Image (cartoon, rainbow, N blue to C red; front, side, top):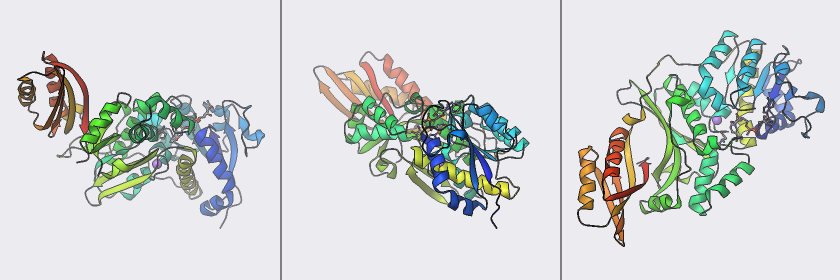
Length: 430
Ligand SMILES: NC(=O)C1=CN([C@@H]2O[C@H](COP(=O)(O)OP(=O)(O)OC[C@H]3O[C@@H](n4cnc5c(N)ncnc54)[C@H](O)[C@@H]3O)[C@@H](O)[C@H]2O)C=CC1
Ligand SMILES: N[C@@H](CC=O)C(=O)O
Ligand code: NA
């Protein structure tokens, strides 16, 4: 039976995502009410620039005082789509203290302070949902937290940042320049307010922390995630990748160790074979593989960024939280009981593609090969191209630890015959 008293929603932030949340709440109001069992009312919208015209949002709902809005006491659900650490963090904890549950898309905040936010939600008996925080529209948090709660997740690997996938795709398929592609991604509403978060992979690292935390029932914070951005990926890297039958993607990889006693989480550009399903993920789409004991390999694919896709995930959470509210219940909170240690990057084992500028003279190849052997890094293939006394040497290794590879590169740099290390890229997905 439909309850007549509406559930009241406070929207914090009305930018790319917030404006789409408001639009869907208005246009789908009847369906949402039917699915929840009570009408949902937009009770207030906190913004920074009140003079901006916001189609479909009555002016009397707009306020610049987000704190007063979350303190009202009659708000059932606060939807936080402001982004950043503060004031979002204080607004969320204030909302819990004043009786509201929270839906957020804020991966930066969750990766930094997720534990404290979950604790605050639990203390006040409220929900904290954040499906939109990882991989936009793709249902991933809920499947990991609920559908796979009976299985053992061993690996989560995928593309979790739409902006950088858009840029890399453009660079690869059209030869577009980095800045041109980034400007387009920003105009399309994919990039973070400060796109450094995207291109330097802070955003992907935050998402990796959240996925590892939920997947491995272990607290993983942003600082635990090894991070390399994609600003140094060049057209030459794409050419090298093509020669190997690969392309380049920014990947997030979270793994349980073989003995199950620890986990690792990392984000970095990597070469992947063109035959791998991740190679054909285009534009701002994301795709994530989850590997678990019983289920085997699952793939989640869809739009990873943009106003409407992200709002879809926010609305899904809003419906779930409203249903919980009507039932006097809460959904699952944080599960960090396994408390596994997060191992350093040095322990990660993978393959590497290394491009060296060397002197083109007899014995160089043998010298280089000796350095690899001395560090226990086995070479799979070597390709040499010489020109005017200089040469480029491309080495692809078998699987080796990151620590061994770093030691190898350090020693290579000290060789007189090695003029420079042009690029080092991990090779994944084989
Ligand atoms: N745009 C996207 O594709 C996705 C965004 N997200 C996350 O959603 C959140 C929002 O992102 P966007 O909508 O893209 O950003 P945005 O920058 O377009 O919107 C944020 C809005 O919040 C407003 N704001 C800032 N401080 C405020 C305050 N103190 N009170 C009221 N309003 C304030 C800003 O003026 C802006 O309009 C972020 O956490 C972002 O990481 C998550 C998934 C995808
Ligand atoms: N800036 C992010 C937005 C979604 O999380 C991205 O590009 O993926
Ligand atoms: Na999602």
